[in-house]
Image (cartoon, rainbow, N blue to C red; front, side, top):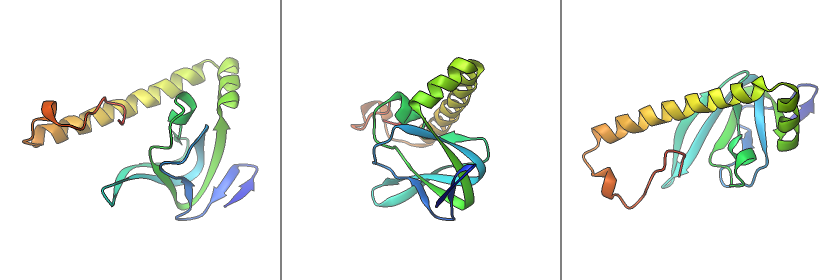
Length: 139
């Protein structure tokens, strides 16, 4: 990992953020690919693969919660770190940035809902009486 004009350089396998750690910034991928995963019952569960111009970690800007996933570099990756103050400043200068951010987040929620619907539809358990609840936002 090293700093450059393009943000921070991460090498293959480097953890950019780790599940459970506190956070107060988001990240924009300037080049390369990252892989997101969570740990569930001792297993590493793949969530997504993101590439150039994608972003991650935005939830900690809006909610003061711990990181919900681990993000690792897949190959060499340049990532720009954006804190809340910088994001709000950029949105003031270019309000369409807020729309693009919400558009991407909405797309992710739609994909997650479709995936959850497929899982629930193929599972014989009664999801309405399960002790573990799901509110649609990763809880």
